[in-house]
Image 1 (cartoon, helix red, strand yellow):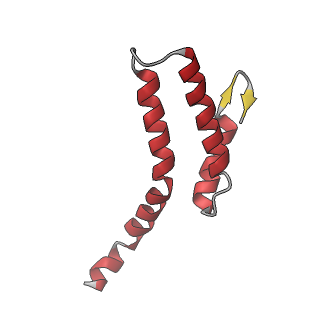
Image 2 (spheres, rainbow, N blue to C red):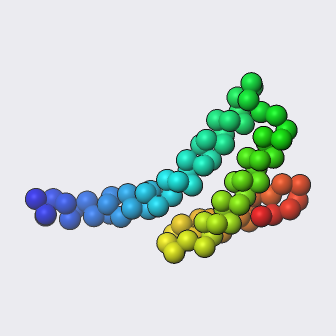
Image 3 (cartoon, rainbow, N blue to C red):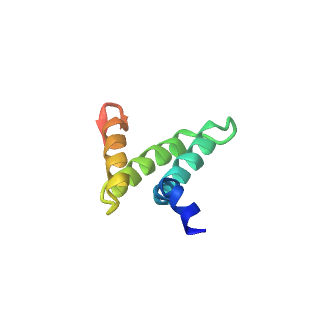
Length: 86
């Protein structure tokens, strides 16, 4: 049984990364659902979502997981509103 599991060790490593970024992905999924609904968005809610996501990116940039931190740093460079990065 262990021989079989060892053949798929790479998949288990990938699952660990997915588990590490799940809260981050859920944040964006929830924000997208709230912002894309035609009956939900008002300007004050939009700003709350946009700046909340920016704060979360900054927070994840301090992650102890090097892969997650690298991903967050790359997102931080791209996440800009009105020319101001987070």
